Image 1 (cartoon, rainbow, N blue to C red):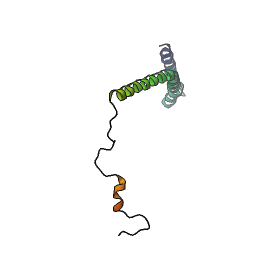
Image 2 (cartoon, rainbow, N blue to C red; image 1 turned 90 degrees about the vertical axis):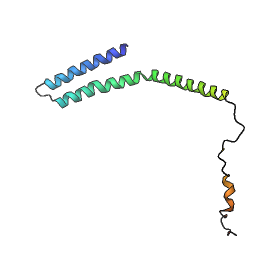
Image 3 (cartoon, helix red, strand yellow; image 1 turned 45 degrees about the vertical axis):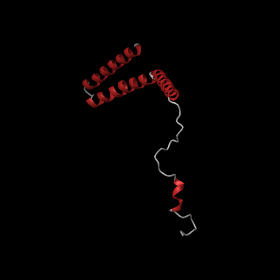
Image 4 (cartoon, helix red, strand yellow; image 1 turned 30 degrees about the vertical axis):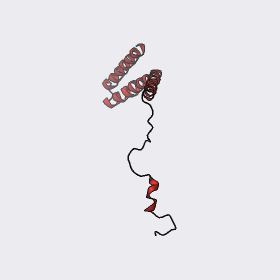
Length: 108
């Protein structure tokens, strides 16, 4: 929570810097926008991303552990089937050898 307070305060400072840039006699709106993005948004976004890395890592590990538990429970609940995995009823690829002659031999 403290990190969010710092980020909000820094964005407030960046907004004030942008307003000062826009209202200055030599300042422009484009300069104010660039000031806000380069001094405010990019540093805060980078800081929040880097400091949230441990939380993302922990959530990923918890999700992987839950998936592993779920797959192990599913594999224990259903016994392996005795039938082969291909139940389409189609002949094997080697059964078509009588239609295509081997290389170097003539059909006949």
